[in-house]
Image 1 (tube, rainbow, N blue to C red):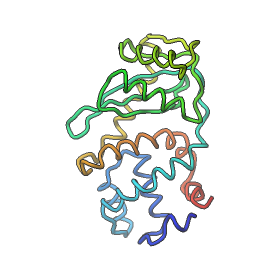
Image 2: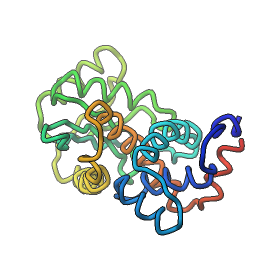
Image 3: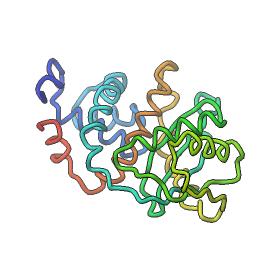
Image 4: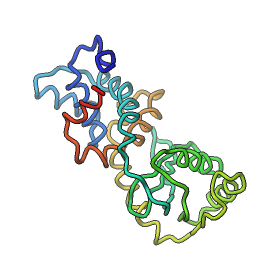
Length: 226
């Protein structure tokens, strides 16, 4: 299986995975990686690295998701805006009381439907559990979304909704790190690939925080030998 994934590739899989790993772990653009590879004697175009990221990020996501730390049942949820080609998009994200990422959702709108889609996505994740409490800001659409999710029994009726701003400091601080990660390279991305690009970075972010800060490159390569 691992051979088929890299069949007919011009570069060895170690080089491919190194570029994908660095791109997702550090705030680098594709052209930054081109310069770094050129200094190492490798001539690679930024579009080639972009294709590698789009092809292999979902596979890495799938294979290392089982290593995610189990989250607890105290959720901190918030939404923030990110600029996409000069337009606002909204990032819904939640962490538990220890700062472990639960999940995220990107939406063009900040409304009840977007909040409901986020909760459905988070509740499906294998590393998440039904929350006993959800802390949010005082945005009305989020409150309505929680009530409706409880009505349709996606959320437990025993789940407490707290609107306490100081308890959400942990997720507010997390937004700064997210924006630093997704900002580089936007001007280099083709418009039709932009949302996919942001999704790949954000979807894999919690995996890199947990795994790649302690796992070495050779261990990542072994994931493709399973």
